[in-house]
Length: 203
Image 1 (cartoon, rainbow, N blue to C red):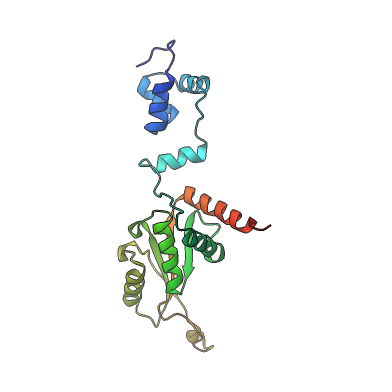
Image 2: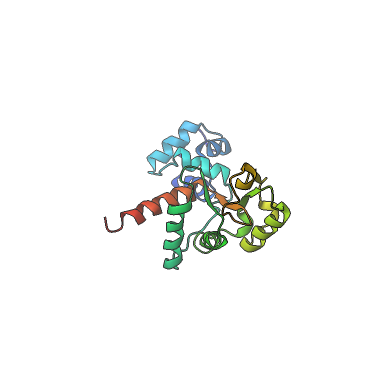
C-alpha cells in the first residue's frame, strides 16, 4: 500500500505495468491509490502507457502474444506474405486464407507454423462443400492433409453445386473449399504491414 502523498517508484511501476502486464487501474487498486496518481507518476517517470488497442489486446491475451516471429527462412516468409496478398482476407480481423487447392493451404499452414510460430492445434478451419460430397470424408481429408484437429473445424457450409441448378457439373474440387484461419489482431496488423512493404519493393 502506498500513501497518497508518497511517490510511486519507477521500478515498481515498470515491474507491475510492463513485466506483470497490469493496467494502470489494476496497479492503483493493488496499491490502494487513485488511478490518476498512477498515471501521474508514470508520466513523471517517462513511462509510455499502452494505447487502447494494445491494452485491449493484452486484456484478451493475458498470457502474452499467441505467436512468435522467425523470418530466417526468407523464401517461405516472402511466399507466405505474397500468398496472403493474393488469397487472404484483408478485412476480417482474423488471418484467413481460402482455397480448394490443398498445396496452397499447406503452404499457408507452414508459413503460420514456421514463420509465425503458430502450431496447427491453434488453427481453425471451415469447409464449404456440396450436397453430393460426404462431409465426414471431406472433413477427414482436410484435417489429415493440413494437420489441423477435426475438432477445430467450425460448422461447415453446404453449397448448391452447378449440377443441381441444371447448368452442368462444372469444374470444382472433389473435397470442397477450405478456409484456414488464425485469430490475432496484432498478427493481422503485422501481415498488412508486410503486404505494404512487399508492394513497395521497386516502387
